Amino acid sequence: MLLNTVFKRFVELAPMCVAARALLESALCPQELDQVFQETARQQYTRTLLFSTCVELMATVVCRVHRSVHAAYQASLQEMAVSMKSVYTKLEHLEPNLSAELVRHTARKLGPVIRRMKGGLPPLLPGYRVKILDGNHLGRTQRRLKLLRDVAAGPLPGQTLVVLDPELSLAIDVVCCEDGHAQERSLLDPVVASTDPRDVWIADRNFCTTRLLFAIVGRSGYFIIRQHASTLHWRRQSTRRRIGRIDAGTLYEQTLWLENESDATLPVRRVTLVLDKPTRDGEEEIHLLTNVPAQDADAPKVASLYRERWTIEGLFQDLTVVLQCEVNSLAYPKAALFGFCVALASSNVYATVKASLRGVHGADKIERDVSDYYLGEEISGKYEGMMIAIPERYWRTFADYGTKEMADFLLGLARNAQLPRFQKHPRGPKKPKPRRARFAKAKHISTARLLAQERRTK
Image (cartoon, rainbow, N blue to C red):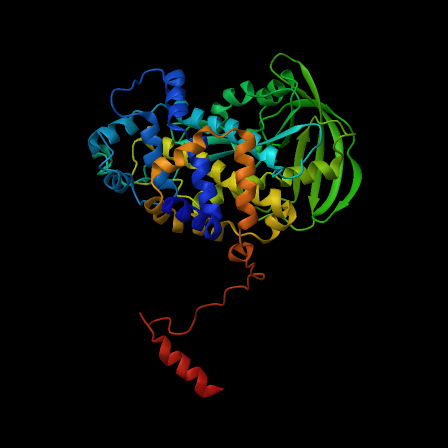
């Protein structure tokens, strides 16, 4: 009876924290994760330490409940049946394909819940499924490995290609690579293999290769990709014609007939935006290539869709601000990639929490007014205390919730949310930095004296 009272208090006062914990139990259900391990692992096997236990430990780190894997282990010492060394050894050898499958598993589990709540964002291109692709290099790690002790350069533990579904705000796929210096284009085979008919890929120019464009079309897919200056070949093009203006500049359009090594031809539209103001790199024109039919996406629409590529940069920002996506104490590449993928899986949980708010209060209001920073602070700040007050066994019931049950539960929590606590505070335009000329030769200066001097001069 007392436990029910405590749970109701958290539902009333910290509903989004309750939502996050219930979703973690559902999306990262231990039995399902261990089944994913059995079906996906190629070389590893389970002796005592379960894959689900590794995910649980890492999730508390990336969600900022604990500052390190060692701290998470220490907090769970009573439940752990293995040593800290065994945990690190397991993380060191976790296969990248297993980490990637964890992300796909959470997307498959949470996508239907978001749709049931009607918490997705409006489709960017009706009749198509838009996918945004971008790469992310993991930041340098600490030099904890013996072979890194005398290395002056920053050690990079790997890189990833992340696929975002902008309608659901879910990371639906990830490609992991242990080589931090590998060319991103060398990782595109899984991207091609995941292309379904009527998928529209939006990507930056680094992914603009003849091979990728022909491969996407070969699988009945579409693309909107910024043109790279030297990776495409064509001998025929139509005359460029002016389409009109948008807020950033003037639009032009023409047709290019791309050619591959087999002399096959692919007609594509090239939308050119002549900028009113050059980019930071001094570029005055941006060329976008697409094979989406003009009746479905005219030139202004193509330019608008390409701008949505920055949505995935927002995802990476949330991974950094709301979560701890790069645990720099994990120097082994496989462990670092696993940590990043657990962060992606946790971000999918966070995206579902936010989708519940959209389902109740409307997408426009949530996207305009709710701060990811304050919402993340609400969840991480109350999580540990909630887990002390409400034992873990109490949460296991959420692992058995179906899509409808989970959606209804989340919507009920979202109705209790006090949105003013998550209010955004947008700042005005940045002012140019003044030249720091005063006290140029002094090492330090007293702020109190400067304030007193300013008061005297007024």
